[in-house]
View 1 (cartoon, rainbow, N blue to C red):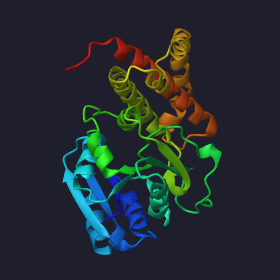
View 2 (cartoon, rainbow, N blue to C red):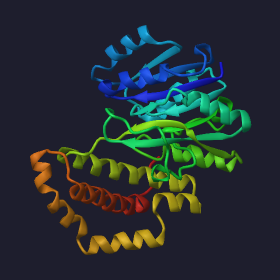
View 3 (cartoon, one colour):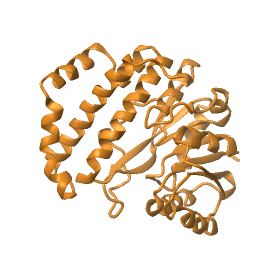
View 4 (cartoon, rainbow, N blue to C red):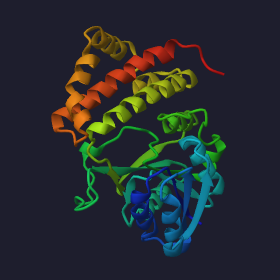
Amino acid sequence: MRATIQLCTYNRAALLERVLEACFDQTVAETDYEVVLVDDGSTDATPAVIETARSRASCAFTVVTQRNSGLAAGRNAGIARARGERIVFIDDDVLPLPNFVEQHLRTHELHPQAIVRGGAITVEKLDDLPPPVWSIKDYSGNFFWTTNVSVPLATIRDVGGFDENFSEYGWEDIDVGLRLRARGVKAFFNPKALVYHFKPRRRGDGVETMVRQARAQARTAARLLRLHPNWRAYLATGANPVQRGFHGMMRKLRVPERLRRRLEVPVAEQRELSGRELRAARALANEVYFEELERALTAPEAG
């Protein structure tokens, strides 16, 4: 088998059906690839969606069900069940185009030992999708971003898969990328290996979720830095003197408090955020991230 599409899901039943349909609708031969889905302890209608997908699957379809253990553990469960020569990682909020697997494999033919990074077009709605043409505004500089990336299965297994100590939100794929880079694995970008990345506009009741994720991401950033105390990690996480100093000044000026006051009305009304409010919410999450990062970097290392 030439390729495995691997994805994990948690409580995204409404979206998962369409994602799986896109995975099954590929231009390569049905016997050339498989889909390996890990259900990370979903409590919504995900099991019913999976059963429907089983009856519609046009390629080999493997489902792993586990108690909620986090994305790194889910990825490892998927890697363990994968049979393709290449494993293509996506998330449960992306729609791969029909030539998605074909394009990944085409680049792997030119660079057999490499990572292949695909393009992601961010959309707020899944109806009336824009033309499938990647542009620089959708660029991500991540070396290994599991929204759309592939690698030889043997290579990801050789580096030990994902570190399951990254149990909170964020950085588990960056850690893998840094380990692969340290081994000399090259990465190549194919803008034709495309997915639509669904990011709906935030609502007022989602602001606190953004804040919680920012705090969790800061704590995992500290773990990443302990594992990889090099300039790439310090630049990626923002844990450098320039950014830490700037955000320290923002805290002294009580900027986070002012941002929270600005967001009190949309949070109370639980409506879709305006452009200005969305910028304020992102700024608040950013300030919270750096606040938590300072705590995490000075806290004793657990375990």
